[in-house]
Amino acid sequence: MDNNIQNDFDNLEVKDKNIQYEAYNHIMKEIDHKVEWAYEVWDELVKGLRSSDNHKRSRCAQFLAGLAKSDPDKRIMSDFPALWQVTKDEKFVTARHALQSIWKVGLAGDEQQEMVIQHVSDRFKNCQDEKNHTLIRFDIIQGLRNLYDATEKEEIKQVAHELIQIEQDPKYQKKYAKVWK
Image 1: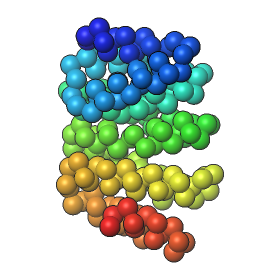
Image 2: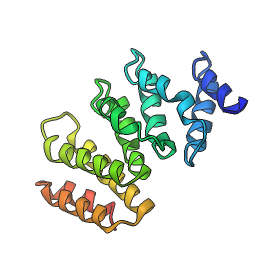
Image 3: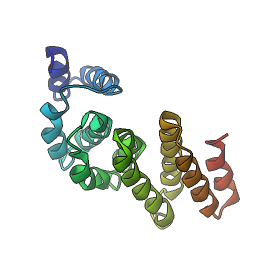
Image 4: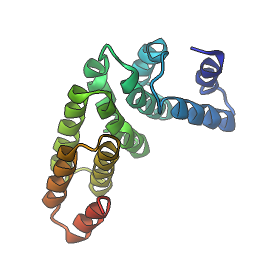
């Protein structure tokens, strides 16, 4: 890992929110592509998913999801349950940030993609009793769209359209369908 990335991870812990935000943005930009240093931070990120600090849980979830494509050992397969748990965090903003990033795990390979699609599909079908379930459903549909745009796999589009049809409220069904126009 080069010094700049190490400094960014260190800067996530400083008190100055502006420095934290710059570091966060730089790391997010870096993990848009495969990186060689994923395993140098992997265990700390997994540990951070259970931090008492919701901001840290959110960042760790987003970073881990983004690093899945840099995971040739498929560690994400065993660490996914802990990552998925953050999508149900007690702090809704933390849960939402994790859910909005979870699709990136599907970029790591077919097995990872299948796991993500299964989890988000089940969540879509069973979240109607959760607070903010319409936002959860929207984020799932948007995540599937992002995954489809990145992979162009028709089965992802098909899953999304099937999920949209489950929505009983025409207003929300129309809102979710708009993501695919």
